[in-house]
Image (spheres, rainbow, N blue to C red):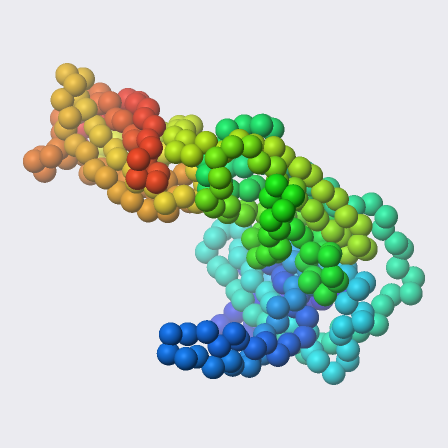
Length: 344
């Protein structure tokens, strides 16, 4: 399938200065969904319309406000979709300068039938990388009890995101017994060469794993029902301390203020960060503690206005700062570096 479109400005004219990327998600027709009717007040089942079936997820280039999206959809949806229930293409675009964005959707089309002359693909998807928490993971590594699965997958025809075919969903299986089948919701598309299928990453949070050895198997299908899988082994150590990969500040030397960042191996974790600043005599001149969710491998910035605990600006000179990160309320890791403070 091929879609062509354009981005319009507020006046309804072509935004010819828009150059960047467009993320497109193709959904199947609406279906009637019924709720369970749970609730403390005696809830009742409710029927609503939704589009639970994703058929394709792509990221393509926008040039001069125009774009083209090419997709191969799973052949098995032929038996489910028809020519009287429209499908929908959801679109989000952002320019390369991160100053403009656009969004929209279109449901003025139908998906049915199949391509008689399509050349069959017999090669399964490529699971390029698969690990836990960060790219330093090796098979058999010690891991905390709530790790983040990180994987990169690609396929020249297209990864199968549809739930229409029984047993053909993207899945993750823990220890051969527990299967997670909602991975599509945690898939992020990446740029692939036009006409070269799909490329994307999976970030899936696991939680409360038991102490000891475990296995994880990732299984991915393509749109021609070819399958690939990959298995990793790891060992859960409850209470395993986080590791700091680096700590740095945005301005060094600093003359007005600076912000501290800590890189670590607990992506997307709720973390408490403490920054302490000392003079070269070992006296602590400033400290603060903040809590929040990390932006993957980097904590949210902690800003220092170069004043001491009394609110006076510190003299110019060399200072030592130390970072402490704490997850699960108990475990921490520390590292120290030097910071130069310049004159006002």
